[in-house]
Image (cartoon, rainbow, N blue to C red; front, side):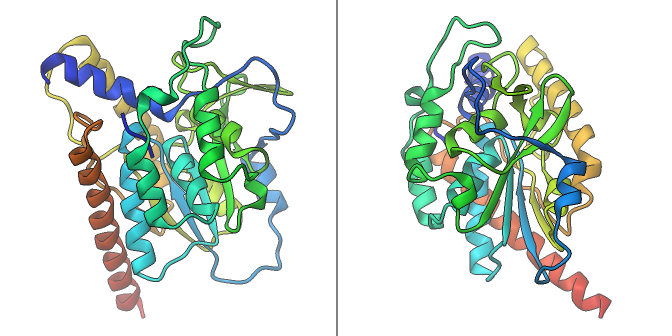
Length: 306
């Protein structure tokens, strides 16, 4: 939900994505962050609930997150409004805005208006060189300083516990701090401290949080993967090769979890040029079209099964 050439462009775009999607912060333990593991969430689901419960699982992927805005638009046009929204990294940003009650158009305008430079707060702290307080403040402004447990749509964000290397769910706390934790790109942003350790980017362990959506009680999970279907860089310079390896590893780990979704939306979103308005609008359109196609495929398969 943020704005952020030859060899220089190819390096700058994915790097800017890291900066935008994950500015995390502060060595002071956050008292209102109480992450829960997947088994803990599963044990707490009530047996008394209305069905079907629809969950939206929005995945990480840097500035490709503009595609989530288009996905939301297509879902609303199809009359599908989720009861649960779970987001990882970039997906946590868009998901929090939507669950807070903002309209898709309001989210679209906020995404297109923000400048990456306004969200960067450099630091000499160990653990990263982006602090993240500016991102936290911006998110809080967007959602009206609401805590995520007060959102009209049930919302949670996924982060990774640095010490245990396990995905954890954040269901309580100030929206800005929660998004910081979910988006804390390791080595770039300072990990977010909490009582039992530190939290980093949820995409490390749960790129598209389908399992947590199920654990929260979903009968139908609509998952949006904005990272794994983009066009691969063809260059062989160091940044390009490292980027391809990181993407391959992340997507191999994420594939089994994504396979558990009832509807998987996977737009092909390219990174170069994502800081310009035309590319951002193109990403929104890609998310919109891919969601329309995935929903139509799902409907056809359900009809055929009857």
